[in-house]
Length: 179
Image (cartoon, rainbow, N blue to C red; front, side):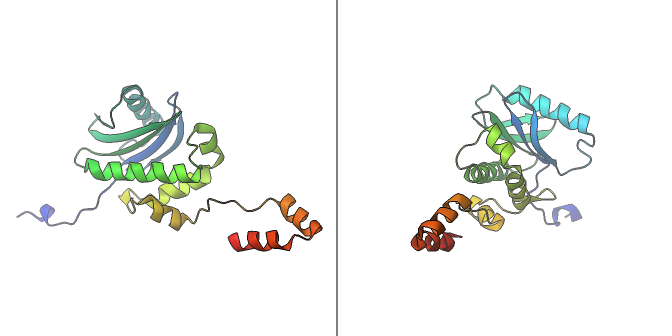
């Protein structure tokens, strides 16, 4: 037996990116610095991937020696890229986790405008799922718990002020318990 077969291996991802319906980059993270070292090469790769996948009904593609799994929603395309030897099911579970987590953060309104308005939450989700290319989590509930992203936003100050003025102490108490 050679020594390479004895080394433990982790499931890894080469890149994650989200494009709009015109193929423009909204979010991207490349984990292999040797794969596409310059921004120009990355955008070129993304354009090639988009041109091959934006009209297809498939969920998986092979391009430039990479395994690419993808999913679309309204005007967004989600991509997870792995090496040719990577397990497609693991890549798909990462993609599903990313999509479900982002969908939860965007309150099921997965479209370009909402994504741009909540970009910090999307970056947190990506960082919880993948760290340095290594897949850490593939369960969206665990990711959302780690990100600690609340579905219910904090109450508007107008309602709190109105409740204070009118003496509605029950509403004030109910809201403070939710937070």
